[in-house]
Amino acid sequence: TGRYLQAPEPEAIDPRLGEPGLGWSRALQGAAGVDWAIAGRWEVALDGWARQLEDGVRLPVGEPLEVLDGQAYGVEFTTRYRLRGRFFSGISLTVGRSELGGDPTAFDQPFAVSTVASWDVKPGWNAGLRWRYAAGLPITPVTGSVYDGDTDSYLPTAGPAYSERLPDYQK
Image (cartoon, rainbow, N blue to C red):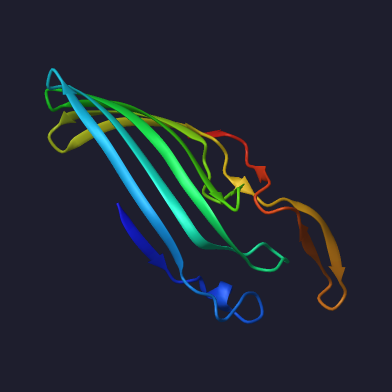
């Protein structure tokens, strides 16, 4: 657990975009977990975390800077299996939220599932597989555009910050 401070990003204190006198964001963070070893080869872990943020900064495109409080919290369940030091496999499930002013942040990912398997074929050689499926990250949609005759280009008009999500993905 700990109390942390973070200076504002340069664009948040830029006089054209933000507020030059902007103070530091503060957060109270904590994490706890427990691991169990079963029969020496199978491991199970449960970890949780939480963060309470004060004076977090959101700088929406084309909108005034916002100073908001927020929170992030979640839990991760992991299981691993090892066989004679040559084979390893694991599965993890993570569920969590990250919010600022009650809205999702750019890092909000409600769930993620991962699995991995690795085999030491011979000394110096290892073969492995990994698969991950996760919720898409929030995005700020482009709702239209405005033509700028000086530059002969279109400037995007943004919708509400992080109000849509990219599709769920796997890799």
